[in-house]
Length: 249
Image (tube, rainbow, N blue to C red; front, side, top):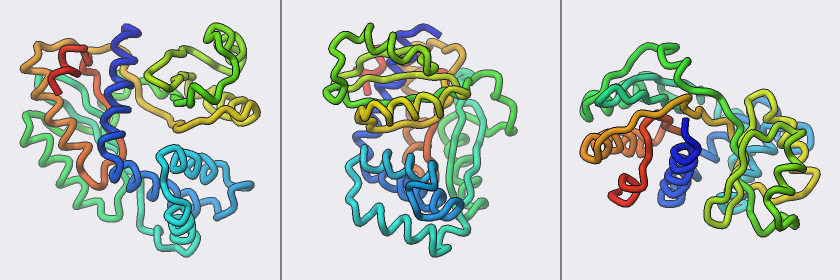
């Protein structure tokens, strides 16, 4: 996939997340609750919880909200939460991969299927899209927290820790690693004390498909509606995000 397309996708996702701050909080609370439920409420001994809390702080979640989510997980209130995925196609054969967390599987399945059907797509079987996406570690760093001014120097420092690509997006530095090097990169960024606003494993499309503006807008309606669902955490797709499309939405 062309580098321009990849970073346009990431920039678009970031802008969408900024607009949907309440949704970001909902997702972060679920992540914290599940991490605390599965590994305990201590940050020092629970790496998953430490990462979830870091992401919540990066989204400016209040401290008391984070603490309530941890207590909820430790107290067993999140026992019914499960993480599930869906795979399907939007119109014009655009692949769509959905990650969700739910306490009612039937409700979430029905909602996701309804959105696919209503907006010209169809829900497929799990495993059908695996070859179209790669798991990648994506770290969003606060640029001003990095003392090194030359990005080439940053690249040289991080290449031994799994850096694949690095780019500037607004006031952020976005770093990509392979799935296998995710933990190594997390460790070195912690060591350097660079401010990481968000870090997560994303599904990056191996290649993208370009559509005319009208067709692309139709696909984006499906994706936007899917992202609005309370149970949905993330929606990945292989639509080429062009500047024309970004400007139109």
